[in-house]
Image (cartoon, rainbow, N blue to C red; front, side):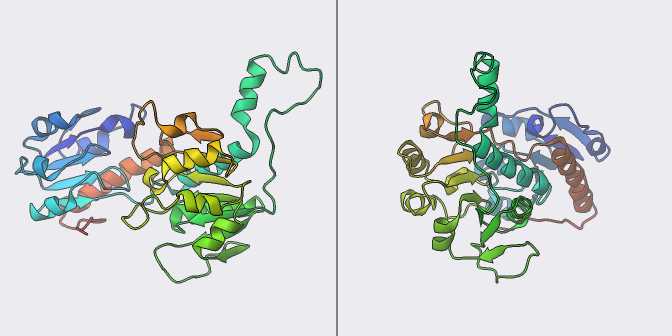
Length: 322
């Protein structure tokens, strides 16, 4: 059984082991694979594992021996699932491995917006405290979260875990489940299920945790941003295309909202002239919320488990055509 990992570096830059996968077949791990290298590297493989390397219909048609694609992530939009299905190739993804890490990161971004810790630490390193006339100073407004409202768009595993942490900080929770599931008790104090208009208007922090669909692409746009409090923050650790980024840059530069913290953008890596890179009050990090060693370890362990299940004829977490 020939197993090829197309882009192993992001998942395992060297601090984890591929040993358990090696037990299952002839394993080749590439750190990165460009589009024009895929067919050559994957030729003859029955098993392909990919994180973000795309596998389009044209590519898949040149890999007749392929039986299984394991996506080393939750999102699987890099795979042409319809083409894979027509070809008889099983595709699986890995949900829930990074729930705690992404929720923790969401709160870290919120706290950074409230306290600007990085900027103040830089100020101290630059000598500002050493020459200060006062024993204490702050260059940016500081915000206490107790009694404020944390708005959750997408009340799935990550969104609800972030809400639990926010609730522990004394925040009220306004939750919207865009999938239309019935409203239910999720055991979080001070949680209220609301419609989108109310969530936009009442929240002091709005955090996006919903999957990207054709119906919600760009839903955080000019109109949505104008509905928010001028003192509110927007956090996105979900998908970049949920936000109309030109509208957000304009909103930030014109003080429609107080700030934004984004771990995802519509194009990754962004172009040097991306409008949010120069926007005011905007924190951007390189899609790293999922990447704690603990989460990546769970991802690797689950990858092995999924492949074993497939080899035993009992595949799990199979992604079906939409």
